[in-house]
Amino acid sequence: MSERLTIAIQKSGRLSKESLSLLNACGVKFSINEARLIAHSTSHPIDLLRVRDDDIPGLVMDGVVDLGLVGENVLEEVALERSAVNENAEYKALRSLDFGGCRLSIAVPRESDYNSIDDLQGKRIASTYPYLLQRYLKNNGISAKNVVLTGSVEVAPRAGLADAICDLVSTGATLEANGLVEKEVIFRSQAQLIQNANPLSAEKQAMMDQLLPRIDGVQMAKESKYIMLHAPKNRLDEVNALLPGAETPTVLPLSHTDEQVAVHVVSTEKLFWETMEDLKDLGCSSILVLPIEKMMG
Ligand SMILES: Nc1ncnc2c1ncn2[C@@H]1O[C@H](COP(=O)(O)OP(=O)(O)OP(=O)(O)O)[C@@H](O)[C@H]1O
Ligand SMILES: O=P(O)(O)OC[C@H]1O[C@H](OP(=O)(O)OP(=O)(O)O)[C@H](O)[C@@H]1O
Ligand SMILES: [Mg+2]
Image: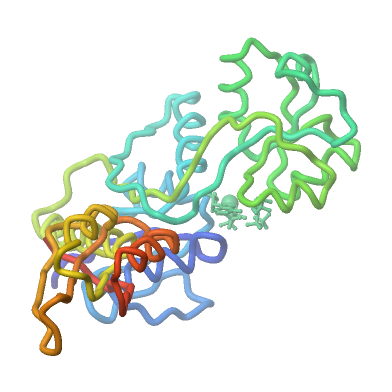
């Protein structure tokens, strides 16, 4: 029987949907039964372990699974916690992924008189990330009391449990809704693909050698666009200069005119409306911007 590669992903939360769609886009298909902890791929010898995100780094570090998809915030927190008690905190960081972007910030009630980090001296700060918070405070010479909460951190000041909080922020809506103001960004995070630190078996490594370029291809494709347009022949250099991150364009003749050509190009950066308007001003027409599903070098 062939060996199965095991991947831990978040069962239900901010990272779940995008972790599954990344694997799906790589051609690794799953049919998920919400009630089950383990899901077998229907296309590859790959198993998913669906767990709470807090458990993912430890499962990878201990070799219970080969790979994990987890936020850097949780990864770093667990690594600090394990190092503090001399437990194995080793892992191999394979890729930064383009989802789960957020920051860990210290926030205080709107009405508090906060001028600098020094105002936190001796205060109580509620957080789910005591190690990341303590590291930051220590680096800034602050000694504060850590109130560890596993959820609803944002209500701690109103409940009289803390003077400030240290929690994840993305749009800032949660802080706003709870009358809190972001003061210090202590860590920036996005989802990461990590692997156990020990070498994989040859069979599993062969699967990784196929999977990683596919992950890169999916990520690259998400950022890229296929642009097609009709351009005046005599302004091609100016047109090319406007196209962001474009590789050498393909220039094709048009059957109905000698003055214009069709230009097809893969652009690796975001194309803004302003650029499209500038292209139009150069005399371009029929400007189409299409998403790309997959890419390989
Ligand atoms: N608002 C956000 N925007 C983007 N990414 C976020 C946001 N909040 C959290 N994340 C990222 O997603 C991860 C999971 O967040 P989520 O809120 O689902 O975790 P959780 O409540 O701890 O879930 P679990 O039940 O798995 O422990 C976070 O550790 C962080 O990396
Ligand atoms: O700045 P915002 O865009 O408001 O996002 C921040 C919120 O998102 C996360 O919680 P989530 O919504 O995932 O729910 P949870 O608290 O149940 O984990 C995080 O814990 C914050 O509370
Ligand atoms: Mg969690």
